[in-house]
Image (cartoon, rainbow, N blue to C red; front, side, top):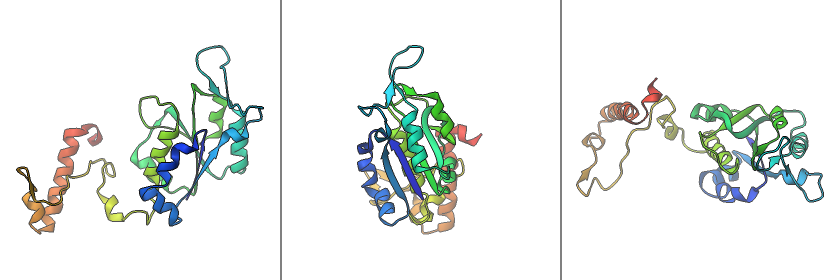
Amino acid sequence: MKIDILTLFPNMFEGVLTESIIKRAIKDNKVEINLIDFRSYSKLSNNQVDDTPYGGGGGMVLRCEPIFDCIDDIDPNHEAYRILMTPDGITYKEQMAYELRDKKHIIILCGHYEGFDERIRTLVDQEISIGDYVLTGGEIPAMILIDSITRLIPGVITSTSLDSESFTDNLLDYPTYTKPEEYRGMKVPEVLVSGDHKKINEWRETQRIKRTEERRKDLLK
């Protein structure tokens, strides 16, 4: 898989791409992630990429020309799946991560400033939001997409780690424990140390339903 990230602040991604699972996935050629500073596509003398909005109003708006020129350069035949990170996009869900995992090439556009020229929307296939709140830019939301998609690529992490994760079947994950068996009066449930794997699996499934009912009843609908 190839992921191109269009951003004005590529240095924000340094820690995300050079640590942990994503770093290993890149090293193992499971995913190729490119950071593209679209400021370099500005035709203005000072590399300006924003301007005041027509009709007045506060803040600055991202100009459309550098974005169009950048997309024309890196995806001239529209072979990539193009995503715009925006607060008014569709709310991101785990199932979307699985769908995006199967794309060969993804382009993620990180908005910034007060907003972006409306014509930029014509360039993308999907607009995505990570929640009902506003951030300073689309970089952090893009990082969330990168992480959630990359970990699903076959061979990045073990398949057994994905089988019962939260949201895979509209249920939250079951509680997990490790050593010591007792700590400050809190004991590991007896079934988990019983060695009876059938009962352990039944307990875990029951706990998933119980936890979902208690914390995210909306998922059961």
